[in-house]
Length: 287
Image 1 (cartoon, rainbow, N blue to C red):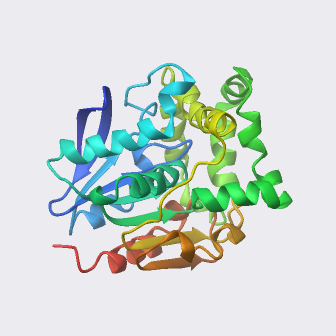
Image 2 (tube, rainbow, N blue to C red):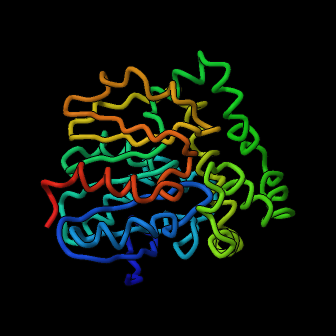
Image 3 (tube, one colour):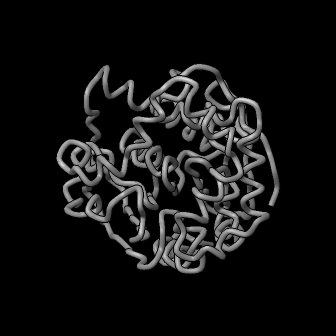
C-alpha cells in the first residue's frame, strides 16, 4: 500500500492506494479511517486501482472547523474531486456507515461518475428518514444521533473514556470479538486523538441534523447504476427492516447480501465473505 495526499474541493485528503485498473474508492464511517478496509484493499488491488481515503476530518486528512464544513454536498464533492485527482471520470464507489451515506448521495447526485455502487450497513437516506418518523424501535436505536447534537459534551464524554469508547464501539458491538485485536483498537484510538478529529467526526451528525431541520427531508433521485447492499444482520444501531422494499429507489439492478451472525462492522468482522461478495459483484469489470 502507498500513502498519498490529494488536494480536492479546497481541502487536503490523505489516502492509501494499491493496484492498477478501474478505480475503486472505499469510504469509511464513524469512528474509523482508511484502516477499516485493511482486509479488502490488498485483495481488491489484484484487480482494481483501490483508493481508501481518510474522509475529511479524520485521521491524517484536513479537519476544517465548523459544523457547516461537513455538509453532505461537501462530502460528495470531496469524492468527486478524488475521482478526478486520479485522472478518472467514473469510479466504483463503496461505502460503509457514514461512508455509505456519502456513497448513496454521491451516486444520486453524480450518476455520470458512478460506475457501480456498493453500500455496507447504511440504509438508503429515504428509508432511514421514513423509519425515524414511523419506527419507534429505530428511533431508540438512533439515540446517539440526538446526543451528538449537544455542543462539546459528546466530545468530553468520549475523551474521558476514549479507550473504553473505542473498545465498546468495535469489540463490544461485534459478534466475533476476535475480529478486533488490541493493535486494531489502538490504531482507532490514535486516529481519534489527533487534534480536531473527534469533533469533526461528530460534526457529520450535527451537519446532517441541522440540514434536516433547516430544509426538511432531502429528496434523492433514483440510483441509476448497478447497486449491491451488504448487511450484517446483528447491527444494534440499524435494524434489518431498513433494508426492506428498497426497489423503488433504483432504476437498475439492485441486490442485497445478508450476513447472519455479524454486526455493523461487517467488512472487518466477516472480511473474507464481504470481499467475496465485492469480487462477485465487480467480476466483469476487473483486470
